[in-house]
Length: 172
Image (cartoon, rainbow, N blue to C red; front, side, top):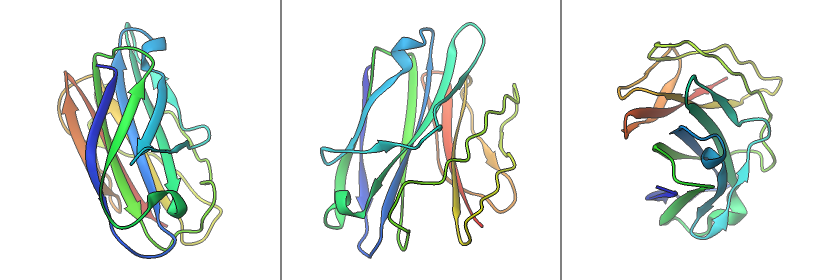
């Protein structure tokens, strides 16, 4: 598969932002590269330094993308599309939308943790900005589910083709 699409409903409000997390498993690093993420045909921007990969004989790759209020359009359901450079063995993704968010690029706070076999979403990330949200994306080369740590809210957790991806948020 070289693309994944789903319907995501965005509510009304001011200063909205959509964050899309993508988790990919594949045997070829080049195929796992994400060539585009769109919402209703509008391109999302990759969160700086959010692309992370690891794995043994294959690759597990995660990345976050965002779209500010001006690109979201009117409230309602529209299609999110993720395209990859080549066919991948497994891909899962989801979108989360927030309101009341400062309109600008996210503060990068990427980390890369390989817990080999753990099923929890947990790492220590801090922010220099008051009233911030931490949004993460995690992946595993196994089907299953993740468990968020204290204070985190799981937003999506999807097993696909022998792998699993998930996103959680935490208000600071």
